[in-house]
Structures are given as C-alpha cells and as structure tokens.
Length: 533
Ligand code: SF4
Image 1 (cartoon, helix red, strand yellow):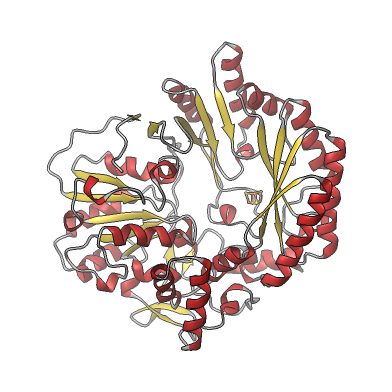
Image 2 (tube, protein in one colour):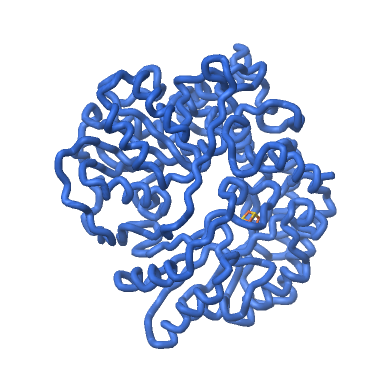
C-alpha cells in the first residue's frame, strides 16, 4: 500500500535538505489505525519537523516496493508498543523488511531498532532482546535522542550505545544482564535504574495529519488529559501517566478552532477526559458554536460515571453523539471501594438517568471480572444493577463489556493473584446466561488471550525466545500454548502460572523494578495494603 496522497498536513514541513538521519517511523498496525494513533502521529510530526531528517511512515500494510528508502539506508527504525501482543505486528514488519528480530543478529546493514510506548515503559523485559534502544515514558524528547544518534552514527554500535547511555533516559538492553534467580537487571554487576521520561504537556497534542482513510475518518483529535487522578488499583493508564497533566484551557480552545478550519469532526482524548478542571467550559465552547449554526461532530471516548453534567450530555447530543461509555469496573459498592473506584450504585443510576433524559440513546458499560477479593455476591450485584438499569430506562440501549483482571507492573495490584482460567470462564458463562435472560448485550473478552497478556505483563527476559518462536509458529492461541509447553518441558521457562497467576511477595525483586516511575515501589505496596487490607 502506498501512503495515501489524500492527506492534509496541518503543520508546515520545513524545506528538507542534507539528510543526516534516515528514519522509519513504524506503527504495529495497519495504516488507518496508525493515522488515528495520536501518540504515534505526534512522534512522527516531531521528527518530520527536523529539516535534515528523512522520515517515512511504515505500517503493517506498507508494501516494500512503496518505500523510498531501502532497509540498508535506514539509520533508525522507531516503533511504538501500546499492547503486549503488538510484538506480533512488530515482527511482521521487521521480517517484511528483512531485519533480523534479535538485536544480536543485526549488523551495520540494518537500522537500529528503537521502541517507546506503554508496554516498554512498564515492563520491557519480555521484549528487550529485539530492541537496541528503549525509551520508557513520554516521547516528547525523542529529538534529543535522535540528535545523539545522528552525531554518533558512524561509531561502532557498542560505542554508540555508550553515548546514548550518557543521556540517562534510555534503557539499552545490550549493555545489561538479567539474572532469573535474583530477578535483577544489572549493568557491569550493578543494579540499574532508569527513570521514566516525563513531559510537561506544555504543547497540547493534536492530530497533525488529517485523512479520510483514518479509522477516525477526518477527525481532529485533541489530548485533554494525560493520566487519571482516580488511581484505581489495577489501572496502568492512571499509574503510568502520573502525575496527571491537563492541557491548558486556552490551548485546547485554540486547537478546537484550528481543527474546525479543516474538518467538522473533533474528538477529545484522555484516560478520563471529564476530569479536566475546565471540561464543562470546553464543552460550552463547542456548544456555543453549534448554537451559532456550525455543523460539528464531537466525540468523547468515555464519561465520568460519578459526576456527569446534563450540559455535557446536551453538547454531545447536539454534536451528533448517540452513544457514550462509562466504566463501572465492578458490580458492588464494596468492590469498587476496594479498587479505589469509589463509585456508588446511586451515582451509576443517576448518571444513566442524566444520559437518557438529555438525549443519549444508549451507553456502553465497562466492567472487570476477577478483581482481587471478588466474590459471587459482587457478580450478582452486577446482574442486579443491570436489571435495575433496564427497568428504570425502558428503550435505552445498554451494552456491558467485560474484561478479566490482568495484574499490571507498576500498579498497586501488580502483586495480586490472577484468578485461574477455568474459574474465570465459569464466571463468564454465568454472566452470559444471566444477561441473556435479562435481554442485555454482554461482550466478553477472551479469558485465554487475557491470560497470555498476563504472562507478558509480569514476565521476564526468558520470554524473548518464547515470543519469537510463537511468532514463527503463526502467533495464534495454539502456538502460544504449544510453544510454552515445549519450552517449559526443556526447562527454558518456569510454569506459565508463575508469571500470570501467582501472588508476588512484597519483598521480592521484580524484573521491572529498575524502571522508576512517578510512584515508588514502597508507595505501591502502601496503597496495595490500604486497599486490600
Ligand atoms: S477511573 Fe478509569 S482511567 Fe481512571 S484510574 Fe480508574 S480505571 Fe483508570
């Protein structure tokens, strides 16, 4: 696929000359998903603004014959990794461009492979052998790293890595070792510490290129909030992005107006956008424009379930939104308190009432099964809640969407046990039956895929070989299972439950402890004890 020519650039590309660095900016998905990924596109823009960088976008569906650069001409290939299973598409792209997957198998004819994004910002170990340079945290200072590479690119790789190491913001796996018995990552015999990069969010991120081919066709996306102040015990979107940063109101308004010069579709992005202190004012700005006759389509990923305002719903409805999303996470007030969601049954009923009375046609409700301390009573309360919602809101469209709890590194629940697959599947069966009886749609995640996600999210360096083998076996659930069994029988991996299911003692070292995020391990332990007793 050629990169689409019907793209509108919303920034001025500088005149390009004397290319000193040739970059492939790669996305582990197809073109139309990549063009909607604000983080990825913002990194592309930052690099494209450098006049002596030659840069091309690469997607899973990019054909080799459609790139201007040949693999051997590329200095650095950058990936973003948002989900554990993105590694399958990363390998697909690397294989297509004849780049060996493991860093140790690459030579001067191959680009350096760089990666950033949530997965490698929390636990890069299961994938660290595939990348030369890993940047944990926000990507806004990527140009500083590229400048260092540009200056030193003629050096031997080991020398170049040493120069990059001096920047003190990167994880360079080739310089390190992992000891599975102590679960420690060391460099020259010493434990390492890598501080996650943190940007000020001084420039509000907005879509840099509009295209109809994007998943959110011709939509101008604006990041309102990074992180979430709620700090639910399981939530990576919150803990990874602390401290919470809000884009400045004036900048948001300026960007809404700018976006509307090119398109009538605006979307707000953030883990919990309605937590922005001026969220109501921002919506009011849009609704005034609509009242003045502008045709605007506004979309908001999810609404706050504890303090929704009628005005916000009215704005959404007048801007064409028919459905929205709220996340209740658990079925009972008790369990929502345990996870720090602190949302009450009454607040949920009230939110739905406001949504319906002000014109929305339906809501998608997110919930999680298998959260720590969950009992059958919590599940039954969820079903009771669904029943009450249906009875109180005749004709309103509800869809419940369930996922199972996966303990994520760098959250207070990273130490918690995950429930076993059989027991979760049994709970899902029960929910499916009860929701069917109620006539309410229930979408359930795959417990087996969630289990695989759990292996990687608390995994270690031994999983690199596993990931590669799984990819070459086809990357399906069967491959994940059979390769694991094979490697475990050869004593190359511990039991899969060791990664995915077990409770981790507070005193244990974890393979991801060397990444220093805003919340220290001591604070995570303290919060875990506060929530779970
Ligand atoms: S409210 Fe949602 S986004 Fe915020 S911490 Fe809880 S689960 Fe995460």
